[in-house]
Image (cartoon, rainbow, N blue to C red; front, side, top):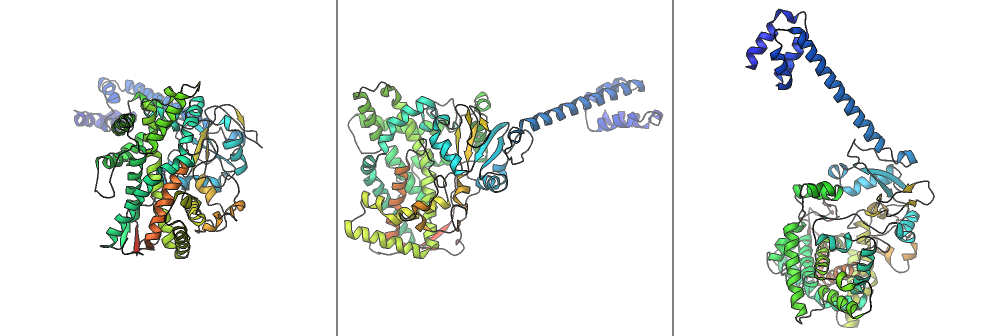
Length: 554
């Protein structure tokens, strides 16, 4: 139909008098049926074609007006910070700076703001139309995170709000609910309670050493990230879920398979995650539920373990500590109704959060610490000598000895400075707040972020910031560190609750590895390659180290 009509249309003698025929012919070639049908009806009346062309031009004009108006609206919304004199990194219409995480590693995007757009003090950015204030000034951060914490009590919600387990996690609690739950859980991470879990962590660290030495007997190079990931998986399964995962001795247990599914981020899951975090109402409306089947599996594991513990089984792990906390609060005259606060679902939620927050961060820190020690043999030798002296005095690695080992702590802290697991942190403003020293007033709901990686690598605070220098964190030098320039676990009342456990876990494993073997970089793997697609700073898979056993009988 189209070709014959076009032939008639374009061969018409009226084309010379009415050039609009050529326009209509072009539109027909493009199969714009909405234009073609009126033309077909008016083929014997060329003047009607002029009317239709005018209608088309008017439609185009209206469309153009809408586009221009939308563009101006976007520009107006994105002038929020500049209207207050805050430097702003240029973004794209409508989406602001959301695309940056897809174009470059997220810590590089923040570092650009830090160095080029005033982010070392204050810088503006946009998540869609949502204004975000990036604060890099340590003095302002002290006010936001500690002094004026009551204005920044909340964090951004993580996950699906329709998920009953997700909403009970401590990291997703807000206001008074967060304060009550945090006050109940905090004692479970005291030094005394950590000491109870120390033997469980030591058992998994011994398995890590055995697995590494067994593998290097056949091949001296080893994928340390794979090994530390298995160690962390076994440790969390044991301490947070009360089960033996055995991923260091078996290829893949059911728990490890579900954890891999939970923690792996496919492209589709990544897009769903971004949509859920940035546009939770939209995600809820279209039925997106992140990690639904995975969370159900881990929840069922935790529920079964709770039943066993209530029947009398005890291991001294995280689940036991939470059940003890519930029992203690039930016996007290606490008016916050702790039994309701720490019901079974809330306890299950904290175990799942333990996996989310603790797996990749601890595994990556341990792998990275091993690699930087392999790159720096003098520092490795010094650490080994400290640990050998510790064992000589105590007869073995003890909780107190590991936690008080000064150079071990310095090596871990320096690794966390170079490679902080979260490259940035954030808080949500909960009531109007005037930023000190400025005229900027934050509104409830405004998001504040701080560039952790950039602060950790600023030569103003850290001489030779890219070099591994553990001495920065030795007791005699700690006074030289400016407050709020080092925050791998966050700072203030809403810092990482499990920080003490994470440090114990990494220190025990690293200490046992350093005592058992000498690390060296493998050919072709001299430099640490960071996974650019991750929100957490972690080494890319397949990075190899050479291990030379120091005690063949180990």
